[in-house]
Every structure is written in structure tokens, then in C-alpha cells.
Image 1: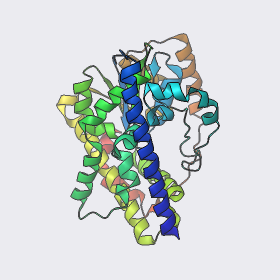
Image 2: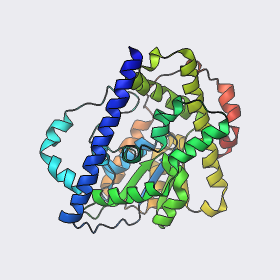
Image 3: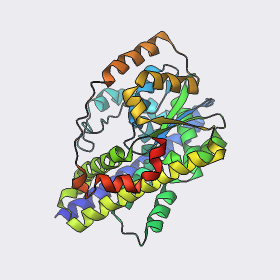
Length: 345
């Protein structure tokens, strides 16, 4: 029965994606006929990092408080055409009442149609590719070697078309406004060269969190999601172990790739490194540094918001609880495997 339910959920997800693709194709075509979008993206901001590295927190804070920035909400990514937004306007009150808590545990990651989200979702629904697609589906597969797994991750996440698609949908997002685009993604780390080719003056912020915190947090989140989507808890122990091992290997590859970018002289002045610990322990100074790097105005409102958040940081305690042993991990193993990144922390 569990296999049947898993199959039905998978089929339903594919049907939803095909429906969204069909609507997207039709409405993009309609945009060309009825709307002449002349929006041009200037000085875009990209927030990039490994999953569970503070990217959502930073992205949402900037979207909520920097009035000259505009990120994409979940609904914007699922239905990105201008035509769609016009047609769905009467349904907004209904959509605002809908909850997605059965997919994402709000204690781990609050999700809503009207909250800024990661652009990986847009890539997932448009192409069935990207880091999220790999995490949801590729992480279940058995790979012949570590090299094969890393190749699979890179093939899923690295593609020039992703960045061109982001440009298209973010242009729609800033339609008839003078706001700057702010993008948040995980797959972006594998597309830095394309980002700089398409957006030569882009501001790229790379968040870095201690893998001792980020990696088990990712695995815990995905276990929770997979429990809701594919009855993870009912899988046999061999399948669970493979899932954990693949996510761990993906994370290790991600950190190695990130470290390689910062070791490359070509990107020395193109990337702004922000440590998760800085956001957590010295939010005010870190946020002001980010604003200066992004050439954002220090308005009285944003300065008050920064001060307010700075005062909250010291008392913040996450409700996301997990134990390394739950994923057959140990502190010693993580410190050894990720030792190359600690000099940057």
C-alpha cells in the first residue's frame, strides 16, 4: 500500500507540474501579445548558499525592509507570467488562507504562497532540474561512485538556461516598478560565471555556515519533507541510510565547490562572503556591510529594522531539533570531512 501511495503522490506531483508548465507557456505567449514589458534589471542582488545557511532569513529580511528591492514570492514562481497575475488577482484572498504546513514543517522552514522563496522552486517547476530536484529525487538513487554522484549534482544544478529564465521571470516581477531584483538560490553557486556574464554588475552574496550545523539541519529538513511526500518513515533502513549518505555527499561536494570559488582569483572581487555566525552574533554590523556592498540606501526605516532585529538575535532559539546520531553522523566525522572549509569560518 505504501508503494502505491508513493506512486500516486509522484504522479500527482507530475500532473501539477505539467499543468503549471501548460499555464506558463500559454500565459508567457499572452504576455507578448497584451503586455510590452520593458523592465530592465539593473544592479541585481544574488543571495547564494548551501541549504540551511541563513539564506532565507537574509532574503526575507531584505525583501521586507529594503523598499527598493523586490524578491519573488512562492506564487510568483509557480505562475510567473504577468497575464497569470492579472487573472488570479480575484483569487488572492483564497490563496492567502491556504496552508503548506503539511509539506514543510513551519518550525523548520515557514512556507506560504505570499512569502519570498528560493528561486530553486521556479527552476524545479520549469525544468524539473536544479538542486531541489536533485534533493527530492536524485538523493534516492544509488550511485556507482562519489564521482558519479557529484557529476549528477552538477548536471542538475549547472545550466546557463536557468539564469536566462531567472532574468525573464524577475523582469516580470518588477513590471511597472523601479525596484531592483533580489534572488535567493542554492543552485546559483554552480552558475557564478553565467550570472556574471548575464549580469556583469551583479552583487553576489555567498552565505557560509558551519557544516556541523548546516548539514544535519538540511538532512533533518529533507527527512521531514520526504516523510510528508513519500512516507519516509516507512522505508527500509537500507533506503534511509542511502538517502542520508547521498545528502551528506552532496553537501560535501557543495562546500568543496564553494571553497574553490573563493580560492579562484577570477572571483576574488566578485563575491561577498557572509558567515552565518556574523548574521547571528553581529547582525547590525553585518547587515550594514551587506547594504554598503549592495549599494543600498541607509534610510531611517531600514536602520530601525536592523536595530530591532539586532536586539532579537541574542535571544533567538530555534525550534528545529535534531541529533547527529539520527543520521549516523558524528561531530568527529563532519569536522574531518569538512576540515578544508573551517579556515574560512
